[in-house]
Length: 593
Image 1 (spheres, rainbow, N blue to C red):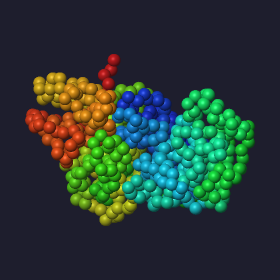
Image 2: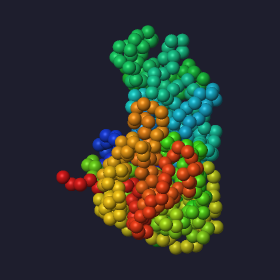
Image 3: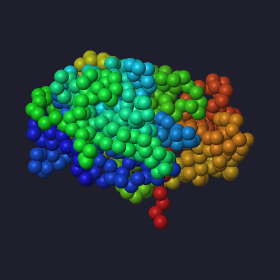
Image 4: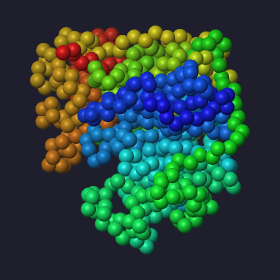
């Protein structure tokens, strides 16, 4: 399936296609949709020479739109690692609505220099009338005459692609928005009378007003919109209740879409939209203006030898600190957001960056791990004296990166895969520095240094081959039944602590329901495994005989404690393997039948 074409200034075409056939990340207890997910491609005008420019989009990428700046914006679905767990939907260790995990990204004209524009931190905004708008599925982009970028924000699956339209003036390249929520400055909602929740449209004097979507810039700095008039949702409870809800509506209108033009922004009511075309016998939607327009072709940064390089002028300059105070068993939103570091550790512990290749998923699941995709270890690069680095990585290869301490253990984590186009040199002024510019690259030691090559990926440690033998050599003579070391699922995937003796369980609520009484939320997948960091995992603490998260048992009264001393004869090399196993996703390869 090839969809959503966009013409590039050089005459080629960018589009979304599922021809690669990859499946979305596998999440614990979630049945995979087994649907090939689209990625972005560039091809010649006659459809030949198609090249995948987003191999890092392991969930989905759709709807590219060429801005006048020459940058391309598109919708990207984020399901890797803990990204889907920013909400719990009322469950324990349960993700939010996966179909709503769409953000706005932008890239250059060849698919390089990827940046997040909106929704990457799943925040909300307060509108001019005081309403709170949460980020849901961000799709269908456009641009106003004044340059403002616009996108539809809606609840996927039931609402016909209709909801809110959000617009904002573009930030400088590489800047997402201001702290603490990384919202673009001066973002605004086009029509507060429209709604993006999983519900029917608002009533005014008993009449359903409808919802909007599919923004497109028009003359006089106005917007062409798709307006769905009527009830406009498939969430009705029952056929009878739906029929009752629309029975008294004009023409018993459920939802009729047409093309309308704003006459003022923000729109005050449905009545200030001007009809362009809306015929009763048709649904019109997704209008585009067909007219010549000027699009810049900014230069791209290339290497001199065609290699693919990534550099940071200061990896220690970051905005990864948790935006909320540490609160045990309530850190799932922080772990899925910008809290990608161990709370309270000193920045001085950052010693290097580790890279993993991210493999695409096939329809058949052959492994289990935390990230949802198999990883292969590309290696690590030490930071230079000023905390900068430069590395050469395989081109057109999805990778994930993490900040490590002097022992190679992860202390900062990125959860969003990236990739580099052939010949691309991507330069960051920090690491997850999204609200401001950092040190100029030319002023860093990395600028004059050779790139360290990390071009060969190796297998990461897996449970049966590497971890279970460590337990057999050192642990099972003492831990026969109290710790499920020899059962991968009970060790790694036990958020309800069902495999833990009751007197050793961590009580997290006073509920009479044992699942809620003992249910652990992300980043924990069990009492022993923190899905973000080995250094926050009880399993690693006990193997190393020390707590390693920078806190003590006395720091918080209700979190997981290290407890009594636990001497072991596990070697430093085995500790390194155990830490790498946890940090790379605690992978287990499924045995063949």
